[in-house]
Length: 491
Image: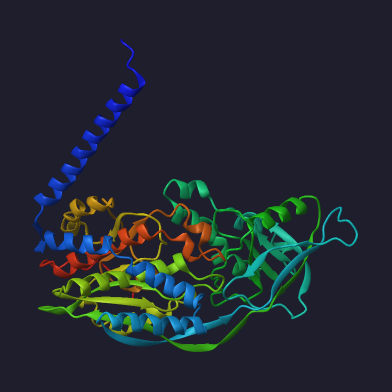
């Protein structure tokens, strides 16, 4: 075969690549044009919605406003209440009908949190080692002066129970790593669930065995000695004890030292659980026309943990829902069904907002056509996850053609979709939707001091707004009625 000169080869590659790209673009365009109307929805309107969302930074600007001006928004805090006022005002400004739904929320306040290793094998005289940690939501307090106790290191629940006789009066450390390999292969939620189990129930399990305090290895990737907070639960039969998340590096250090002999920690945690506080869900409606009594919800939660400004958890999801409302108002669209934007309060440590809404609407669930919540960060959107009856999947499929034009072609039906705030609606049979996002790095920042605005790419927000705005309009206009799912839990 004759050798081709380098410049000629480059030109040939460029021509072939451009031709191939043109074919792909034309096919995608033809696919979209071919589907001009499906299930009673005009695809020209969906294209207008897409283009309006892709050309707007409304959501990113709202996120900057929320995070840079207010900052952390843990339930019961001044920041949380400032967020309620801000979101309500923003929605009124674009012409939505706004109501504030009262919600009583937990008011847990982080206090001092320090730790150091004061005894370990071969420790030089006078030397101690600082441990970087942060209290878990729901933690009780140590004495103000702290406590000094030996540490029992375990790597599984089985190991904890195997050493049950050694637990009493000790600090139990659960050193279980977050599996970044699972996250890198599209299973970040599974990785979070596997390691997160030790945060969710580990302290309560240790408490029942007599532990004086509990530590968990931070649940997340990116081991840069950053602690990851989050809620821990006690149930009805466990006495709350001081509980904290330590950095991955410090958990590994303690594991290495404990392998050589006994280690002791001086631990100080002084959180307080104050009386429940008054707060609100923000509910902003765009009333429907001939089916105004039926509701399509698009939502995200307003509260965040207190270590950072909650840009990805869940500032991004909240402002995307606001962006959907903004697109409809800017285009002067009037849906058949009522479109309801909800900013939920207290997802992080109680889900009181979601529960309050459910309790107020449990007799009207048949009027809730569908519910959407975005609460998986701000990664690049790839498509939709939805929970409908199997026969209704065909009603969602026509969206794929126009979703392809923004690179979000995946439509995946699962038994469960939606976030924690809408879980009771989902469990009661309301068809639920959530964006499928790239979450490979989400748990590197989730619940950490690093969850800040700089982690959010404006283009990702635009794509998510475009996708969810098209979905919301499609659902609000469909002549067919999506079937209610069989309730998965008793009332």
